[in-house]
Length: 470
Ligand SMILES: Cc1ncc(COP(=O)(O)O)c(C=O)c1O
Image 1 (tube, rainbow, N blue to C red):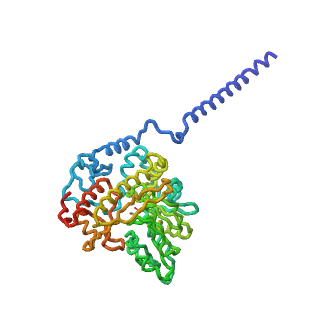
Image 2: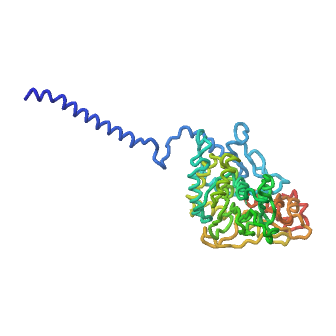
């Protein structure tokens, strides 16, 4: 009996020790993985960044360079003594852009959406993006050429703003909506038809439609000008561009010909530029980040397409034209901006409130000035109920469509040019009595426009002597 006990004891001790060691191992294993997960939990931040620090410090140092509020320095700007130089707004010069040039014209020709630059400066922390050197090097992103997260957020944004119904529609991304315009003309053109499709738009139209259609000179389509010419025609083979709100007169438009192949260009169908009476729900709709967030340089636009065949043809076009359209880097950067826009909706940081207030004030100032004489007139825009702001709101157009009313002022852009204002008077298929003034640029551009326009409005006969009167 005693001998047996002595024989059994080492086996029992071994078993107890082995079990204890197993338990301890399980304990340490759990400790390690639950307190130090492989990936930090979503939403947590790295408290002590290592490899991003230099890039972050450089971005902040360059952003802090003072350009007197009349210019900006960029991380990729030309260096002066190892430091990026200020790039000054038109009419400003000097190392810090503090010198106002005399003899300088107000350049309000282009639709460069710099009016939103201060918005992103106010949202510097939220909008900053840091990407690693190995970020998305592949041709492919999450859905071949398209970031699925960006797609999800764009659809969510349209639903939140109420400016488009996107359910049941395919989405394509392009290098700006400009790339998609011709892709859609190509895709909507009938193959092997006896005559090419006629591409048309209503005057005054965005000049790119004509320019692009003529440049690409496709076998299956050709530019046929203004819709007005074809109203009574029984031709069916039309592709109509409808821009709503329109560039340059900023009115909401519908199809003039009522055919089946219509490209609705909704570049400006956002609450900073127009009331949103109802969500757009057309079969082919294009939008662009250039006018939504102001990031024109990122070259990003998108189109919703109802028909699968049209979608497939657009996808083919994008594949052969640019291996899938929008840059994957651009998509990563813009995803963050769409997130910021979404998160700020309804708050004081709402981009649509910001944009609306800025453009409404500019439009109001211009209207007051222009209406002080009969020499010029502007397009008629009325307050309208907006489902986004849930109230009747004033107009806040992207452009002024200015008409020279004096009989002798047959070329309005030239009249303005003599007065020191660079406007856009051609390309819209309209009379040269009209010219477009962009209200989208910086405060400097807009203030200069007012200063140059004032003498033209108040003393029409002295316009040519005002060229150098800034
Ligand atoms: C009506 C309209 N559509 C499209 C575009 C082009 O936009 P993106 O910068 O996306 O090519 C513009 C640009 O001014 C525009 O005014």
